Length: 73
Image: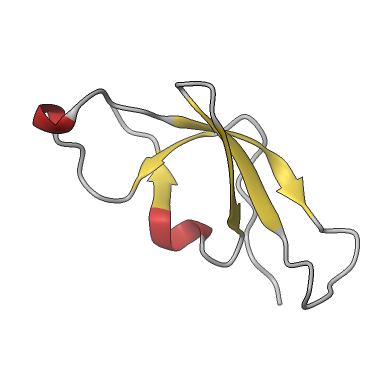
């Protein structure tokens, strides 16, 4: 499995359009990608990222392109 990894410290946003009426915009900064030393089905690669609000999140690298896109403001 070969997936493009988002660059460390790159900026991302949700793939759904931002609606200012629903609250504050939160962008996300990629911290890194885990579980890349070897491939094992029990430990898939995960993108670790931080929201502008300081919360840390992780998402499967395979799911990443379905949920986030490069930030555009």
